[in-house]
Image (cartoon, rainbow, N blue to C red; front, side, top):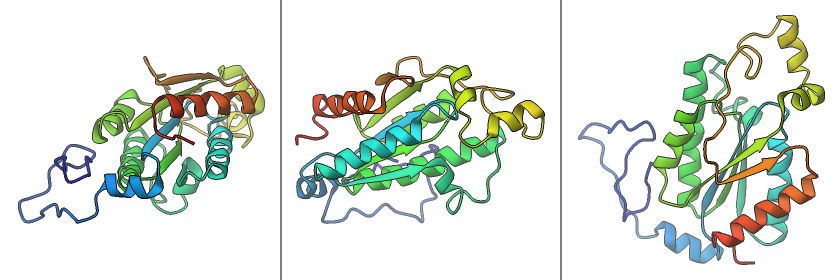
Length: 214
């Protein structure tokens, strides 16, 4: 969804609503909100296998940004399934719908001038690209937390790999469901490094893109 008044609105999935539903431009636009926040709005989209460290990194980055006075919101994969996506399972269609919903929410938050952090496996390139294309140029920052499967499985913070190997959990990404790594992420992080080092790399990227100036 391309949101500000200077850009034509369309739904994240590319479907235009019928002619009876009209996009309303409001007096306060994204640029006004960004000036109020004193930084740009953007989505930092963490992708990687379960156990790669996405949520840990997103949480650490949000904490650092909050200390700098940056207005943020963190959308976490497990948390949204308690509400926004509680009706979805883990089939390919459900994965797609999950990402479409999250992408739509992220678009609205960027329009509000926030720095949005998302921590989702988001296994398919097509859905990640769809969210990128729904945002203004430069507002989607794809961060690939590249952690080897063996390391993720050894960590297994939720015990999901153990269940998948035992056959009690099916369609699990990295075991019996595909994960498509980004071809050209905005930032590739080696998930075995110290979280503090990885967070510094993320802050450097945000400064270089002029998302934040503090």
